[in-house]
Length: 261
Image (cartoon, rainbow, N blue to C red; front, side, top):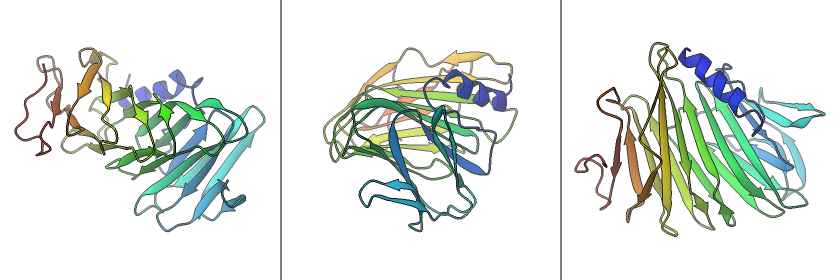
């Protein structure tokens, strides 16, 4: 199983959870919701795609973007990656009744799944992300209980392994912001929140090499920190070193932190 096949496998595996987004399309962001809701996408220059429940208007302003519809699933939105020079904002709105849904986003070598969104009228879930995943930010205007964030990444070099990261036990409240930052060069995934209120997280990581062999980062790790910052370093993840999780207890960076046992 190659790294590229892994990502497609991840799409198929979670196809019942969210609209499939074709990760093989390296030129477009694909965004889909598998529940009754509305999606509004805002480009870095303020152009919009989708329905704005506040103004009650449908927008089609992003050049090259498309909306695919069918009878048996919710719309899938596609936005050209080449047109993005900053943060892309994705807002998910509930419609007329309370329901749970899953949001799928794919791009150049990655799939991001947000599973278990509690959607209802006047509730807004927001994701802000950059094309290189150096910033993925989650927030909501009301309590969103325990959504699960899954991130699958294929590195640019086909002979390098792929990774799946799963963050659970999250809780979004008013003014709470959870931020994930991927750095493929440094081989790190950084997590932080703004501490309103303090959160406890569970992180699970899986490495899949080009033969399809899997290696898991221990068991899901419960993380509690005053600084609300932690980092998973997968640079030296091999048969001896099983990844490295660092917790920034004093908000002074990860340089003085040791790997958690």
